[in-house]
Amino acid sequence: MKLKALLLFYVMVFYVRSLNGVSKEIGNPSWKRSFLYILVASLASFLYGYHLGVINETLESISNDLHFNGNTMAEGLVVSICLGGGFLGSTFSGLIVDRVGFRRAFQLCALPMIIGSSMSATAKNLWGMLLGRLFVGTGMGLGPTLATLYVTEVSPAYVRGTYGSFTQIATSLGLMSSLLIGFPAKETEGWWRICFWVSAVPAALLALFMEFSPESPHWLFKKGRAADAEAAFEKLLGGPYVKGAMAELSKSERGGEAETVKLSELLFGHHRKVVFIGSTLFALQQLSGINSVFFFSSTVFKSAGVSSQSANICVGIANFLGSFAALLLMDKLGRKVLLIGSFSGMIVAMGLQAASASSLVSSSNEVYLSVGGMLLFVLAFSVGAGPVPSLLLSEMFPGRIRAKAMSVCLASHWVVNFFVGLLFLRLLEQIGPLVLNTIFATFCLVAVIFVKRNVLETKGKSLQEIEITLLPPE
Image (cartoon, rainbow, N blue to C red; front, side, top):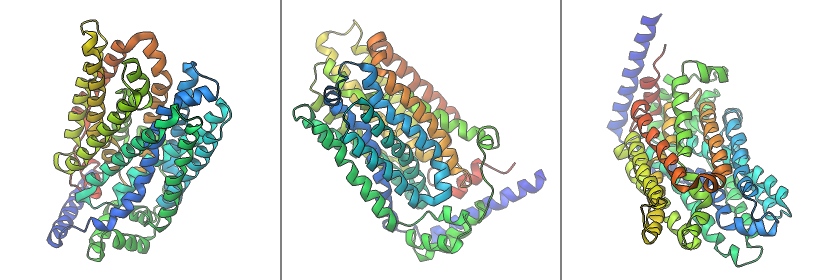
């Protein structure tokens, strides 16, 4: 049996490589055919970024109007409750996608964001705000998973990394939009309610435009709808590429397969190592401290004597520039190089922030080190540690388990994110910025070592070639 499986493995490798040779003869499919659909899917990431940052400028006004000003635990809950909702949404995202497909899943993602935004905008007390943020959080949990998986499955291989960076750029644009819209919140009474109403617009557009977008051909083929999968490939790639794409897809997917993926298979079965790598990578991404920057940058900069508006503009610009650099470099340098470089830069940045809080630095230089370190941290993160993990893992997982395995890995992201959001201000008060930033820098160092030892490169390979190479049959 082992010899038979080994022979089958080599036949499949030869077959995929021969298909790649044919595709090179006719050239690559036009990136323009799938570009608009990538933009539509990226609206989910835009909404994720918007709701990630909307609380930054508005938290003070919200706490004053809803009468919990000065209660750091209540303020932490307003931030972290949506992350708890994100955990729920992420946990069930794989099941939802496998059942209804990507188009309907995106529309289900938009629904709680519209409802939750409306509830937050009309909240009369802390509990009303928390309930609205919980609804929004479920959509936030669905959105990044859906966007990453959809982009991975509908993109041509030669631009998959570039298109994967679009989700990070959309997140940074959403973050910047929330900061810009939130600027009048401290001067204009009730402006924070407008900030929540505004977010319902892109959510409605996501639900509308998905009605006209193609379904993932991988999902269609897995459901036994081969003819629909061919039609989707023709829409995404063009007629000349359909036959090769379908032949390649059939080698790693079994159309109409009714077998379900059990959680025990992901945690203890053949794919446990890849699931472990994914879960650890997402946990380290959040333990680096990045979302403490996005959630509480106004508070941190205010303590350094810097205008929160100026600081947040700089944070948004740094995030966008890093995301744009990732767009240019993802398919040139590769995923692993960007991850190592990104986490290494974050170590240096956290070192600067820790140094600014030490007694060795004069008060005149403290602000420059603190602000400069924070901006460098955001820039370094958005080049690699931000966009790469989701794309890399969606490439590495086989199609049969891709959606559910991603939801399991992202669950670790949301759990860690929740506790960082909940405890950051309390830890900042109790142990101070020097110790806290040193802890974050240590996690970044652990991430560099982990990536060097465990992460494999996927640049330029088709999903089927990656599956055959990284996960050979037992």
